[in-house]
Image 1 (cartoon, helix red, strand yellow):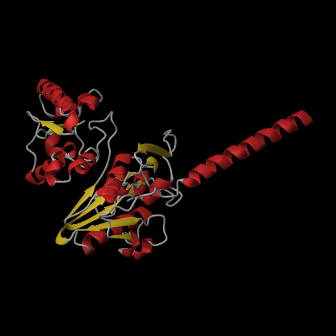
Image 2 (cartoon, rainbow, N blue to C red):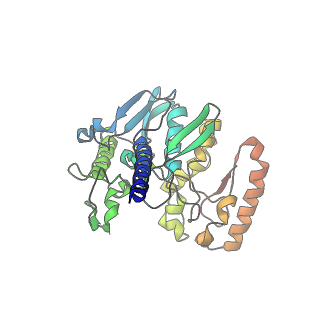
Image 3 (spheres, rainbow, N blue to C red):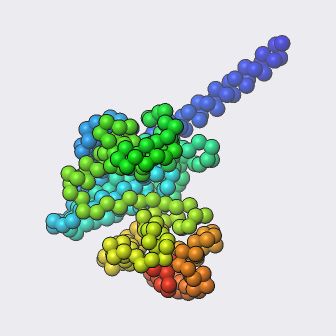
Length: 331
């Protein structure tokens, strides 16, 4: 009996130690990533300044404001809508730390769903953070959950009914920031964050809003970031791209025309969802989008050869065939 008691005590002690380590690691996720205030940042506010009900809540988040010397249009960039899509978070941080506007105003929210950065998706085996080696040392970034932390918003309903459209979705989608717009002032935490972002857009008269995302490499997109040609229904049906979309795509495809050189190329690598030679083999049926698989393959091969030649110059190489949008490779 005494032997079994000692074994039980040892096992209990081990469980307590393991729980303490895991709990400490879990709580550490509540600490926001360090973001260096770039030369273009003129002011940092909290989203609660546009919707006071968020103040002190897990949904309140930083809004970085960059004002140019001259008046102009305004733009809002959302990163971290889905905290398990790190490209969106990193692209927003790149803007904050490097962008220097000449005219107009840029608003950047790097952690749109701040609550989602404090937890992981269960049973996914996802890391709590990842590191990137930089010239200034190792930097650590959080890898969160796709949705709001259930500790901050619970329980999920069996069926989530989107307030403004009446669309019915899975109950867990009630914590998905990208399913909550335009939000509600008296809604859930996720809906309140959506409402706060919409209030910012209205009060600041934001001209255009870009919501950054990232796709898995095994999907129909590569692991790029922003909503782009791949997500346009007209493109998926092999139709001509609307002019409004085409304008934004041209900007994404050729950022060097904006005059920001290396900085723009770095941002572009985080921006459009584009097909690249390295991820082509993972896409499965993606070639069916253009209706001409052989032409698609030849175009990809041509872009790959050109991108290899342009590597030393750091250029972005694009090719277009029957596909309605450029096939780009950033090497």
